[in-house]
Length: 207
Image (cartoon, rainbow, N blue to C red; front, side, top):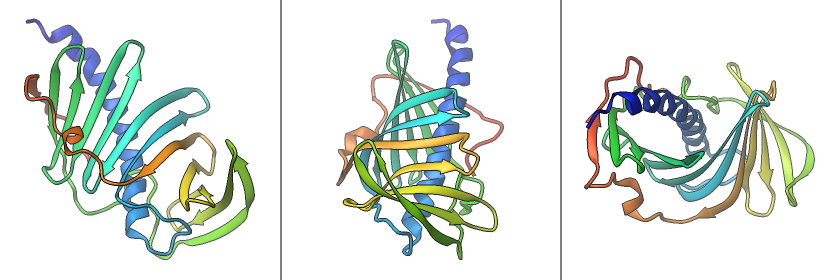
């Protein structure tokens, strides 16, 4: 089977999806590690997230998290793409169901969240900006002010979970919908055993 044509396009899509995943994983790490944020976010949940980049590109994804395991499903036209980030195995798997392929690469964790998207810095201050309603949900809007970055976070008041995160320049906005807390099925985080597996060597991996 000639893998060259799909391989080229796969690498481009893989890079875009992985960038989005790392952006969000950096935020999740920070949320989970900080006890004083004005919201509660466990490390087991599922959610549908919509990421709008620079007011143009919109990516809708289904995210599952269970501890150090993440699954991100994206639909691009007729094609479904899945990324599994297994921090416990130090592996990233990109699954392409249409081609029955699994692309495997390494995950390097240096223990620093500073370059994983939008971290909540130690010593950052939280400023209540007011109240807003988003998709029928009453929210408290906060501004997280740090030495490195500042972001807006809308916290759903009833469930105390983040409903929206936005950069100060509003060029990247992440919305959450259908948030469900609780353990996730273990099978979601395993690549299909009957798919062909290809190892990928990336110049720059997660840090």
